[in-house]
Length: 565
Image 1 (cartoon, helix red, strand yellow):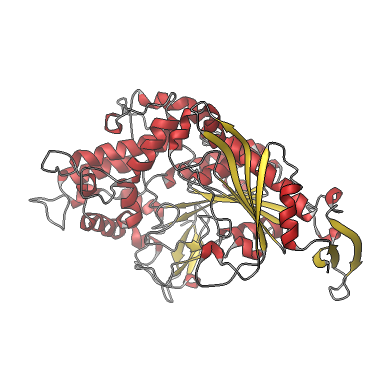
Image 2: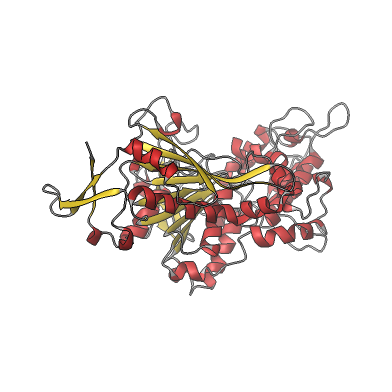
C-alpha cells in the first residue's frame, strides 16, 4: 500500500525551490487534506521508506561518489546508541565516499560523509562540524558539540550530515598528501554540503527550506569557512570556540604554554620533567578561588561564576606567591611567573604578540583545562592535548613542509611561525573580518565561547567580533546578523563550573525562521554538576553580561538581567 506523506503547502514555504516541487519519486496525485485546515498537502509516495532508502544508492546523482545505505526502523535505536531515553524515528543512514583516490603517500583517501534522512522530514538541513584532526564520522543521530542542550535534531526531523574532512583516522599524518591538506582546509566541507543537498532533493523531491551549520573547535572553524568561502550555503551558522587561528596563533600559544609549564615541572629520578606536576589540583583551585575573589562580585552576587569578564582583567597571580616555603595555600615564585606568562600569551623576542592571552576565569581548576594544558600522566611522557593533538597537527600539517622530527620544546618564536604562514593562508579564518557576502545573503552567525577555554582564547573571538563590528557599522548594526555569547567557567566547548547546557540550534532556528534575534540564551548546569546542580543562567550577547537583580535565588536565571554595566 502506498505511504501517504503530509508536507506543507508550497505557498507556506518561503525558501522553497518550487522548480523541484514535483519529485519524480512521488506519484503525482495531490489532494488538499480534509483535516489540515487547507494548509497541508497529501503526497502519495510509491515506495516504503526502507525501499526509498535502498533506492538512493541506485539513484545516486553524484559523480565520483560511492554510496551505501542502511534503513533504521522507528523505535529500534536511540540517539548515539543510548540504552535509555526516547527512540529515534525511522530514518535512512547514507554513507558516502567522494572522490576515492590514492594519495602521493600511497594511502587511500576519500571525502567520507554520513547523512541521516528521517522519514518525516521537517524541511531543515543541519551540517554538524567535526574537530581535532577530524578523520571520523560523527554520529548524525546526536547534536552538535556546542549544543548539548539540543534534543537530537534527527529526532526532530532534521536531515543531518557529518564528514571526516577527507581522510580516515585521527592522526594528522594525512598532511603528507597535498590534496588531503586542501580537503581538510575547505574542500571536504564544500563537497559534503553539495552532495547532501543533492541527495536530499533526490529523497524528498525538493531542496531544504532552511540550511544550518553548527560546530565547535575545528567545527567552529569549519562554520567560518562556510561563512567566507561558501556564503550562500547556510542560512544560519553557529561557530563554537572557533579555531580561527589554529594553524598559526593558537598552536604557537600551545607550544609557548607547554614550554613555560614544562620548565617549572618537577623532575623524575633521571632528570626528566613531569609536566602534569607543574601544578597540583590544589594549586589550580587556589588560583580559581583567588580569581573569583577578585571579580565574582562584579556581577552583583558572589556565586562562583564571574559573569563580568572585564572585572577579571585585574587579577595578578603574584598575589598568591609564597613569602616563605611552598605550601598548599600559596604558589611558588616560578609557578606564579609561569601562569602570568601563559595568560599574557606568546610573544617573540621583539615583544610582538603572536596570539591572544587567556582570560582569567575559575574554570582553570576544572578537569577540562588540565586535560589540555598539563595532562594527568605521572611519568615524564606527557599526555596533555597540547602535546598529543597540537604537536601532531603542527609537525604533519601546519608546518610547510611537514617536519616530523621537530621538538616542540625547541619551538623558536622568532622563526617557526613563518613556517606556518603558508598553510594558515588557506586554513585559518581570522583574516576576513567583513563577511560581506554572508551578511548580504541574510545569513545569521552565532559565536559561543567558554571563558576558560585553554586552547582557543575567548579573547581571540572577542577581538574578531569587535573587528567585524567595526567593519559593519558598529556593534548595534552587526548584531542584526552576528552575535557573540560568552560562557563563564566553561572549558573547551563544554565542561567546567558553568551553565554549559543550552539549545543553540533552536536559538538559531528562531532567529532565521521567525526573525527573533537572541536577546539571551537559556542555559543551565546539569543535575550531575559538581559545582552548581540545577543552576540556570541567561547567556548574554557580548558586550552584555548576566547581572543579579538583587533579590531572589541566585540559582534562578529569572533573577538575572543582561546588561552592559
